[in-house]
Every structure is written in structure tokens, then in C-alpha cells.
Image 1 (spheres, rainbow over the protein chains, first blue to last red):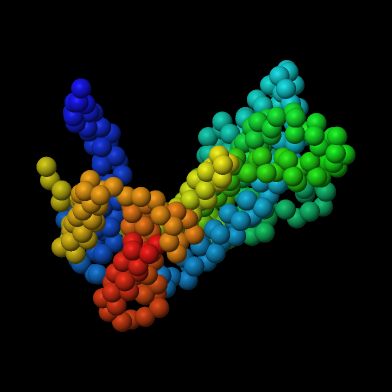
Image 2: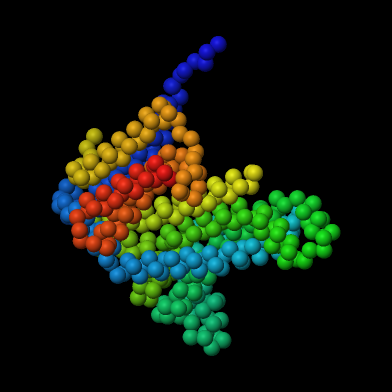
Length: 291
Length: 92
């Protein structure tokens, strides 16, 4: 019997298509439209061609924010990935109350809303009432994240490490749990050192989850907005102003809609490029493991 | 429905019409002759759609680079992008 051709199922995806159109495609098209115009108000526009793109590409403050953003994302990865692996290696295995407790404790920071994390660290770091700030001062350090750029940077970085290292640890832990005991037994018979077990068994087996962890942490840190906004407001000066915050200042603060739209498109293209590269690496890693 | 809030201009309308036409053409091409994953000069195996995406993404960066580097007319970047996209789709 011939298979009945019926394309009515296509109608079932119409609701999703409409939602995506209204939430993503139409707004993105509008941003493209805005990026080539000077926007004075509703219905009052002037076509300016690629002028906004030229201005954005020549904007020194944007270059600084991009440089800061890249350094920040790399620092986040350099700290959180090794730290997450070390925590995962130290976690208890098997099914026990200790394991459950550790997992719950690790998951706690991930459950806290971003602006609450910023507020917690804002108070925590204050020299007068904050535990960390007051302790540093009592020890004789002149720590002040509102006036010292280095202190502000370190606080934002430590805050991110506190907030997100758990994610890396949990992913790495999941990778470690998937290693069959036979691998460890074989390593023991061969008299392998702890380092050799890590280097030749645990690390290769964690590769897949680590690539996902790197992707998630890179993308998230590259688009970070709420926590530094609440903690430092981008200051002191512009020292912790990252791309999202600079974009918001431009669009909402200065109502420079056209320029902000051009900036958004460039930002989107950078994120798209990195996502594509990481996606390709992930899919390649996956296919490599299957073989 | 009123789309005045989207602030349409002729160049952006042409741009999106171009993208939409490419998607329609790719769909028709796929129905006529389904794509096969192939390995060209790019470091991974790609389908026809992957190569179009890489071509378009590369074209966007070619245009941005052109705007940043020179005051010459953007048609130059457009020409380079066409060559790049054609090369990627054919040999990528």
C-alpha cells in the first residue's frame, strides 16, 4: 500500500512560527530597519545609510567595552573551568546522603536571580556593613569596589565565579559519573598515578560536557548585564562597563536608537559567530565519541 | 495590520526580500535534489544550508570590515561577499 501523503501536520507548527515571528524575527527586522535611520520619534525618521555602523566601528568606548568583555569572558573561563573540575573531582561518588547534600549545596547559587546575586555582593563587599569589605579593611587592605577599578573588577569576577562555578562542577561531575569502574580498575592494575588517571581517563571522558560548559559560560559571560549593573553600575568610571551595559546606555539612556541598533547588530553577529564555532566543535565532539 | 512602527526603508526591504528569496530557493533546490554532507576546504563536513549560512555570516563580517577599513563604496564589499559566498557554496 502506498504511503498517504498528508501535509496537514505543517499547520500544527503555525502557533510556534507566529510566536517566534513576533518575539524574534519581527523585532530583529525592526532593529535592522532602525540601524540605517536616525530615529527622532514614532514615524519621524531619516535614512542615513551605513553612517551608524561607521560611527559604531570607530567608537573608542565601544572598542574598550569589547576589549574589557573579551578579557572578562576569558578570565571567567580560566578560573571557572579548572575550579569546577577540581570541585567535581573532590565530590563524593555513589548514592549517599553526602552526595545529595553536596549536589544541593552546589546547586544553590544557580537558583538565585541575577539581580539578587548583584545585591548580595553589593552588600557583602561594602566596607562599613559588608562581611567581606569590613574584613578586608580590618586586615588593613584599602578595599573599595566603588572607587577602585581593580577592586571593582575583582569583585565582579569573584561574584561570577561564586554564581556559576557550580554549573561547571555539576557538568564535570556528570561526566565523571559516566566513567565505568573498569577503567579505574585497569589503571590500578597498570599502577597509573593519580595524574595519569586524570590525564588519560577522566579528562578525555569529560571532554563532551566540558565543551558544553565552556560554551555556556562563554556565552553567558559575554552577554552579562544584570550583576555588574547592580553591583557597580559599570563604574568606577567605565571600568566595569561591558557590552550589554554600554548598549543599554546608548539605547535607553541617550535614546540614540539608530546607533544602538547598529551596535546591536554587530553584537549579535559576534555572538552568532562564536555560537556557530562552538556548535560546530560540540557536534564534531559528539560524532567523534560515537565512532 | 499597521507595520509603521517597524520603520521600513526600501534598502532594508530589498535586503530581507533577498534573504527570504534565498531561503525559498534553497528549499526548492533541496526538494529537487537533496543535499549530501561533503568536505571541501572548510575544516568540517557541511550541508548546502551550512555553507550558505557560513557564506552569509562571512559576508556580514566582510561588509563590517570594509566599513571599518575604507571609505570606498560598499559595492566593493558586496562584490567580495558574492565571490566568497559562491566559493563557499561550491568548494566549502
